[in-house]
Amino acid sequence: MAVSRRALIRGGFTVTAVGALGAAIPLTAGAAGEDSPKAAARPTIHGCDEWDARPPSAAIDVLNRKPTYIVVHHTAGANSSSTTLDHAFQISRDIQDLHMDGNGWIDSGQQLTNSRGGHVTEGRHRSVEILDGGTQHVMGANVGNHNSEVIGIENEGLYSTVDVPQALWNSLVQLVAYIASQYGVPTSNIKGHRDFNATECPGEVLYGRLPELRSAVGGVLGQDVRQPETWPLLKPGASGAKVLAAQHLLRARGMSVPLDGVFGASTFAAVKQLAAAHGVAYEPCYASRIADESGFIGSTTWPLLIRTVRTSESTGDAQAARVLLTSRGERTAREVLVDTATWRRLLS
Image 1 (spheres, helix red, strand yellow):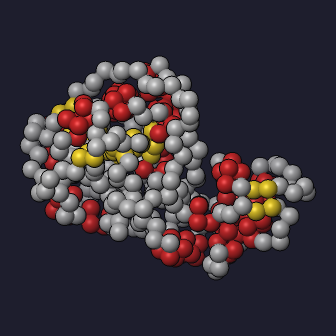
Image 2: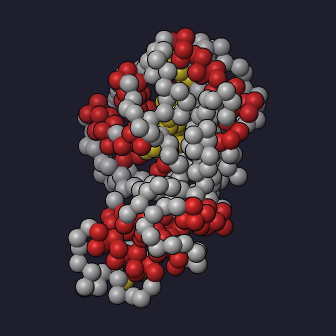
C-alpha cells in the first residue's frame, strides 16, 4: 500500500520520495535498436558519510540486476536562494529525517539528491557504490509500485510554475548521463514521477523539460534520442476536450459526473473512487500545497478508462473518442478504430 504524503509534512518541507514495491502497470521500454550509451564522465557525488547521514535502520536491499528507468522528482519544498554545499547537506539530512522518522523507512527513499546549487548527494546508503559498479541496483522508495525498476533523483525545489536554476539543470544532465552510461539506460527510459503515478511531480515546468533532458543526455552519450509516449495529467481546474472526453469515459464506467468539460469536485471524486476500486497507488506530490492528488487522471488512471472502440458505436467510449477527434480537427464521419496507441495520440 502506498504511503500518504501527509506523513511527509513537517515544518513546511515535503519530498516526493514515496512508494512501495508491488504489481505494476507496464510502461513502454526503450525502442529496439536504440544505440548503446557511450561512457559519460562521473560527476562529483557526496556520499552519506560526507553529509553525516544517520545509519540505515536495516540492511540495504541490493538487487542483482540493473534498474530499467531513471526517474526525475522534485522535492516540492521551498525554492531556496542558498546554493552552498552546506545547504545541500542540510537538505539531505532533512529528507532522511522525514523518511526515517515520519514514514518509518530504513533510510532516505531516493538514491540521489540534486540541490539548487548543483551539488549531488547520495540519498540511500550504498547507492553510489552500487551505481559505480554498474551491474546492480539499490532499491529505494520513490515511485509507487515500481521501486524495483527505478533509480530516483530528487531535485530540490518546487517546479510547477518556475524553472529550475541553471546549476541544478547542468548537474542533472551530467548525473543522468552518468547513470544512463553505467546501466545502459536508453533515453526513452528517462522518466518523470508522473509517468508512473498520477502526481504533479516533478512539476509542470520540469516535467515539460524532460524531452530537452533526454536530448541533452543523448548528446553527451552520442546516442540517438527517443522520446517515449506519455499520458497527460488532468487535475482540478483543468477544462476542455480532454476533460470532457474523460467525463464520457467515467460515465461509461458507471460514474456519475457532469458533461461540462470542467474538472470539478464531482469529477475528482469519481476518479478517486475508480482508482481506489482498482488498487491504484496513491502518490500525492506535495500535500502542503495540494491536499489530495488521489483524484488526478494520469498514467495509472487512463489505462483504467480507455478501451478499444469504434467511433461509430453509440457508447460513452465512442463519444469520448469523437470529442477528441473533433477537437483536433479530424474527421468523425468515417469510422475510426481507436486502440491504445490512438488514444495516446488523441490525448497528446
